[in-house]
Length: 165
Image 1 (cartoon, rainbow, N blue to C red):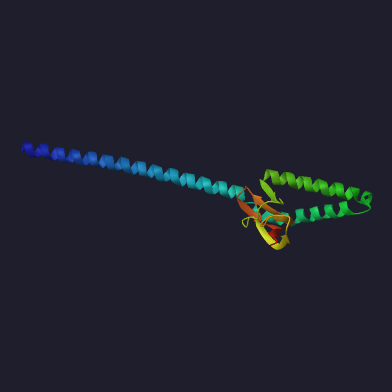
Image 2 (cartoon, rainbow, N blue to C red; image 1 turned 90 degrees about the vertical axis):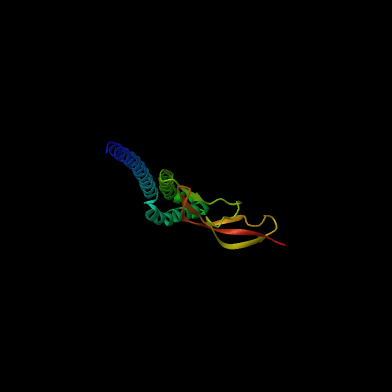
């Protein structure tokens, strides 16, 4: 009976050790899941923080387009002195918007003589030319904008070159 008693104690100790190890494994697994969940949540919060203004910013783009068109029109006008005050006010608004865009990490897509990139450009037409190699941006009809270097607010509408054969 003493031997049976010792064997039972040995079995119970073995079970206890196994149970303790299993509890430790489960605890580690739970902690890893909590950390993963926390990291995922933080990524979601950061993503929301970065892109929550996307809708309102898209509505800003036509304002900027019209200000830039007005500035271009006035600068090409003959009686520039009559428009000086308007130019100054438009320039002031444009500068404020540019600063806002810097704060919100919005970049303008308006480079010419760069390769056409369908992820940021929308080809509006093709210009057949002998001077420029194919698939280059010749003219930007309407600039595009990108938020945090990763979220396209609007593609740039462009004219693309095609080499004459």
